[in-house]
Image (cartoon, rainbow, N blue to C red):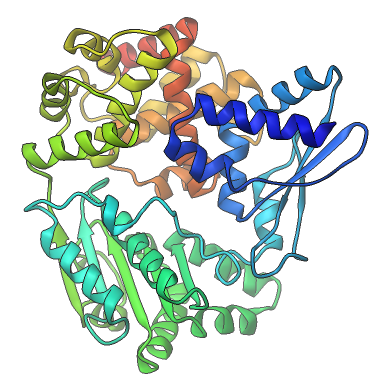
Length: 451
C-alpha cells in the first residue's frame, strides 16, 4: 500500500512541479522498502538529500500521511550509484544533512555536480564568450589545454555554471572519470577534519588521485596557511600527471596575491589561462530570461522580460530568481503575467528600492529585532518555523544586498553551501503566498533603509 501511495505522490508532484524541477529532484528518488508505518526511499547524492529536506520533504510527508490515513515515518537513504551498500538513513523529524555527508564520500562516489549546469543551458553573450570557449576546449581536451583554467568575476555571473558544465560533459563521455567539485570552504573543512581524525593520508589520496579538480571560490583560502600548503601540493601532484584543474574566484590571480594568497600558489593559479566574466548586456539578460521561461513552458510578454532585465543588471542568479518569483505568483495565485503584476511581485528585487551599503550584521540585527529572536537563535540548528523563516530571510537579503557568496553566507550561519541555495529558493516561495511573513520582510527592508 505504501509503495502505491509513493508512486501516486510522485505522479502528483510531476503534475504540480515544472519539468525541470521534477526531473532534477523528484524523479531520482527511488522506492526501497516499507513496513506498516514506515516508508524508505533513496536519493543518489547528499546534495539531493539537502535539497529534498529543505524544499520537498515536509510536503511529501504530509501527502503520505493524508493518503495513508495515519502517521507514516519517512526514511531517506543516500545510495551512491557506484556503491549501493554505502547508505545512511535520515528521518523526516530531526536529522541534519551533515551527518549523511560524513558517511558518503561526496567527491568519489558522488561527483557533486549539478546536472542542470550544462553547456547547452549556458546563454552565451559578449560578456562570457571567451570563458565559454575556454571551458568547452577544456571539456574536449582535459589536462592539455588551459591547465589550470581560472575563471573570475562578480557574484552570479556563471563561473560555477561553466565549472559544472565541464564536469558534466566529461562524465558524459567517460562516466568512470574521478571528478571532484568542491568549494574552497569545504576543502578547508575536510582538511581540518582529516587532521583532527588523523586521516591526512586518506585526504591526500582522495584529492591527488582525481582526474579533474573543480575548486570554487578560491578567495576563501586567503590567510589559511596550512590549507594553502596542502592545496599547493595537491595542485602540483595533479598538474604533473596532466590532470585538469579549474578554479573560480571573485578576483584576479594578481589581486589574490595582493590580498594575501601564498606567492607559490598564486603563481600556479595564474600559470594557465585566466578569463574574466563580465556583467551581461541587456540583450544577454533578455535571452537568459527567455530561455528560463521556455524551460517552464510559459509564454511571457516581451515587455516583462525587458522590465526585469532593466532592473537587475549584475547577477544572473538574481535575474533568474526574479523571473521564478513572477512565475510562482502566476502559478500560486493564478494571476496573469503582466508588467504591473511583475512589478508588484518584484518589490523584493527592483534595484531602486534596495537599501544601500548593507552589511551582514545589519541584516541579522534587523531580522532578529523584527522576529523577536536573538542572533544566536538565527545561527542555531533549530528548525522551528519562526527561526527557519528568519534564517532564510537573512540568507536571501545577504545574497541580494551584499557582495557575499553562498559560501560566505553559509560560513556566517554555520550551514552548508547547498542549504543556502535551497533556503533562498524556499523563502521566495513562502513570501509569495504568506502575507504575514511578507509584512515582516517589508518591515526589515524599511528598517534597513532607515538605519
